[in-house]
Length: 105
Image (cartoon, rainbow, N blue to C red; front, side):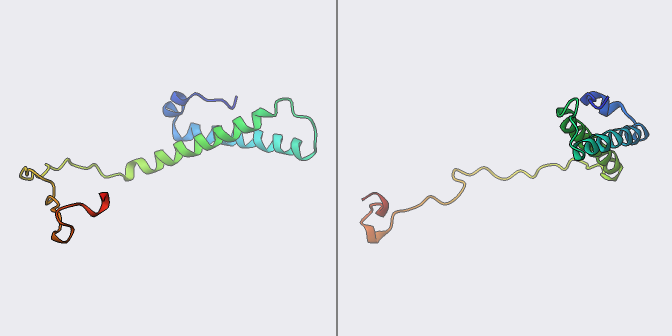
């Protein structure tokens, strides 16, 4: 019940996601109650799976919420810069070193 494939998230509407979120939260509450009473869970790994699925649903709901707020950007033409031989000025060796690099002596 709690495992939903990634492509199914994309196909679900906001109302379906909210309904699924309520079901998952109820199931998580039930499993956490069993853990608190120190009873043996049938499948302890299911708690982790449910928490991850809940996070995926909340993420998808957030994506849906933000989607209309994004303004469509128009591509701007890139400004072309004149080509130069060097990106910056080439380094020259100082007179005080006698034409040698101080680093490699």
